[in-house]
Length: 114
Length: 117
Image (cartoon, rainbow over all chains, first blue to last red; front, side, top):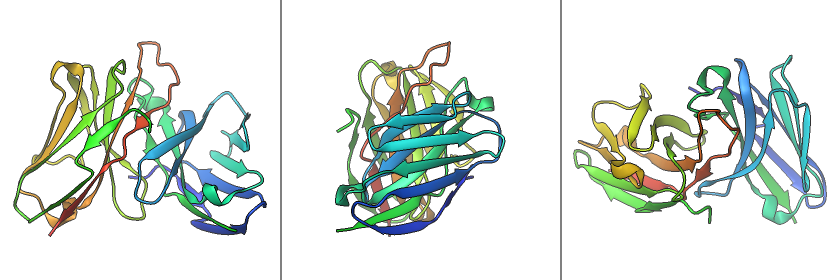
């Protein structure tokens, strides 16, 4: 079963604009990760944020985590055509900290219009 | 290229046939995971190995599914008597795990897309 839901399910923006995706989850987590998946391909890890962190940056990516609301957001600034992909949040539940299996959300399909 | 490879990349089979997929993880990674992803959904956990030991299996993994990781290196996932509902992308991931549970990312392979006719 999916742990999280992502919002929106699909997002289309003009190149150069910022893209924001949100993820909500249901149970206590150890960390939350964001992955990108190009059409029909494997997943690429983007960023990991621990449960005791509130914000993290990596290049054009900014991730926030609000454990009280059980939600996270991924901001991609100055979007490029190459950012077109599906984006998934994945959580490592506190209960699964030993095996670190990932529980994925349903994903946001991002399309950057050149 | 993440360093994790999967073979084959695509497999088309007829219902009732057996299929086997292979995953080669990053060599120093002791943990290996299998996930299944259906169209429009996020990946779902199937099973996981630490070295050669299979430590957890999801309820999604019916008796027709078996996974192995001999010698703690590559892994195989076999599906017997395939059904149309088995059609999906099968993803393998590996990571370096430790007793302390470092917050390490998982590295995913490109996946094997299975189509059961």
